[in-house]
Image (tube, rainbow, N blue to C red; front, side):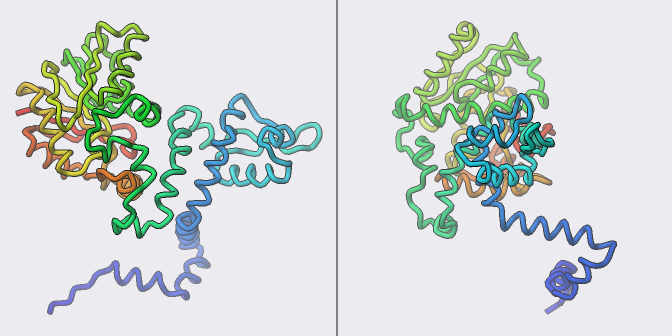
Length: 375
């Protein structure tokens, strides 16, 4: 048997030595690296605590409370339903996570707090707060991660929440059962639309059908940017009804049409020269995902275009999001998985598409974009 040198195994044995770790922490050139690595490892260990601090700030609406400017701890504590010592513990924790910042003291000597970098960024993305509240279900599903990974956890809160994921007949879901998750999809997808539309121009197209388009957030962004494009949405009947009401209320009734049906059973309407699947394919297992792609291909004439936008596995610099977060989230949901671009390209070709291109997007960690042509 031929033996080959693997520098990674040599590296791992070196790092695992306590003596080397002490030397790296003391030596001036390696000290910053050692400190960053130690902090990163501790962040992995303490991640759940951090997420609960974030949840507490969102639940107390601290970010919104400080949107207009700093407030003293003495003013914040009663609004938080806490004594000042109790509030101080959470406020200090939020400062440590850059959600808040210290802003001096007031006339009575009470410390003041304003928004930090992360807190200010959350103001521009209201979907983040909605997802943070939603994550309480995911945390409960991950209470025993090995049971989830081994398939021993047959019922999950996310599986019940995303009713369509396991429903035998999702088209029969009523308005009440889709309202909550439909609202969440609307706010969480809002910040994706701009990145997709910045990466691809709709100037050459006359009609866009957004497949699995929820309540129409993506189409509303298209309507604002490209007034010449006719708009069509396809989703479950109860969701499509909500979308049409929204279009009508915004004066888009003559330009935008919402069609209801079951994506896996109902033939898609024809006539659009452009279709979009925005964060849809990764919600489905392989056989269903391929059926969706084939249904979209059947709705397009040869030469028609498909936009497939979603977070993808193996995204350089964002592997924890595509592979770790969405990998476990979709497992708990009971359907789908994140896929790397090359795997999606193979599925697109099998479904009858060619000319597949991966277009750069502004924030690939939240969405990447594949463009394909019906052949």
